Length: 164
Image 1 (cartoon, rainbow, N blue to C red):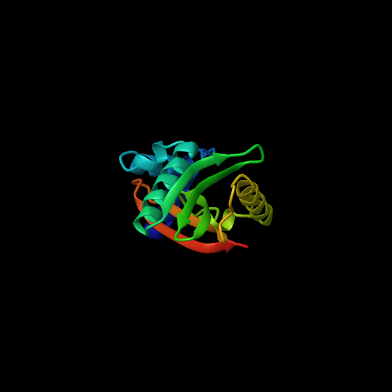
Image 2 (cartoon, rainbow, N blue to C red):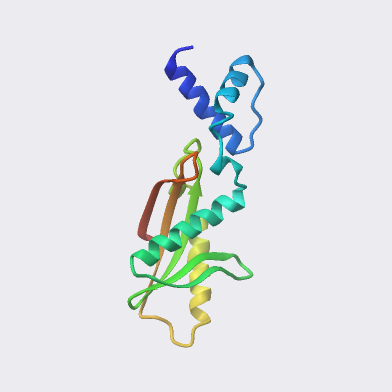
């Protein structure tokens, strides 16, 4: 089997295993599965919830490194949840974290739909109403995290004012 074909097959198998989709057991799949057996660790062993929590922890560490003060994590309302609420100087920052293990279905930030943006704005406004003195400024950022098969960060992008 040519190298490029095998690599494509391995990548497809890896993404399928990660997303828990059914993979047919053809000889090629068995061969790729055998080749990956010793390699698939870390990220593939994580559940979807654990992947999300890992991404949020990485985002918090990144934001702290930039000098942000983390006020809340996973702040819940009846209508939904805000992943991170932070302060950067005099600005209140609401952060949506998106984490993916493979690019088969696009990059993390592409998964934020217009309805999700509307929901994020509504959640931010609901949080602002709980404050006795709202901040002078606020914004909604996105942190996109991609994890490599070994569980390490392959990409982390911080998009300021991503939702307006």
